[in-house]
Length: 178
Image 1 (cartoon, rainbow, N blue to C red):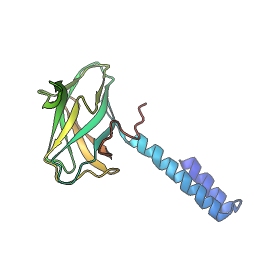
Image 2: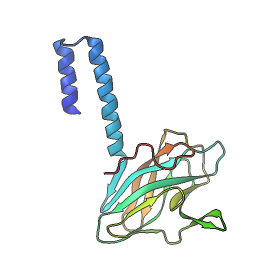
Image 3: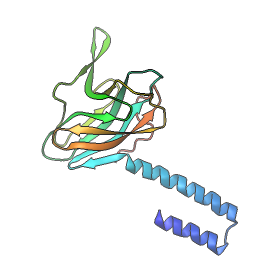
Image 4: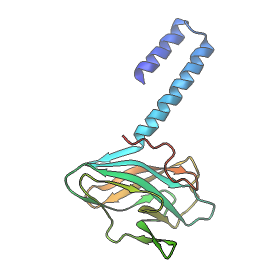
């Protein structure tokens, strides 16, 4: 990004391009830099854990619960446990599992948290393990970023941002797993 901005300034100062062309070029460069910065900013690391693209679904007005999703990679040699977390606009966060019983999907808290084994990748996704945000204090609006935390037994509290996706999203729209 630094090299790019130096070249844009040189372009403008040298007068080698029409100023409007330089402005358009600059706007495109900033948009691309912002998009790549967001992708990198949306991955969090603490110790041996990588937390990739936390996201939630948008909620209708008056909703009291919402589902949260994330991929957690344990590159270490010891297990850890996801115990819960927090999110802006939510009073309580629980780790849940979805199961199908008699053709009906049921969501229940995971007692003792969700184990993240050494060398394992655990995906919290619709229809499986997920975070359940309870007693919401406002709607989650598609496109906004919500501050929150994930609480681990060993790694402790990790600050994250949850990206709000559409109501029916099945996966994050802009996830980049490395």
